[in-house]
Image (cartoon, rainbow, N blue to C red):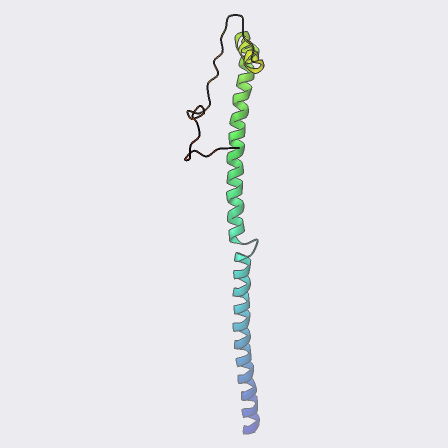
Length: 123
């Protein structure tokens, strides 16, 4: 009878040890899966990247909306003011009235200067 009891106890201990080992392995797998999910291609870093991208797109949208509003106001001014219309047409078509003189200025202060060794030549 004692032998049977020892046999059952050994089996129980092995079973308990196996159960504990199983829990440890299962816990480690769950932790590893959690880390992989957080660090993977759709993890926390990807989420943060998407939030940054959304924020940039929202800023671009607001800038475009402001630009659209400025253009609408300019169109209204052009519709209502014939002097502004004339100035815009003359500017676009580069027209002059008789007796007017146009001065063409360089875009940058170094445009008329000769290039030297320190000034790079642009193609």
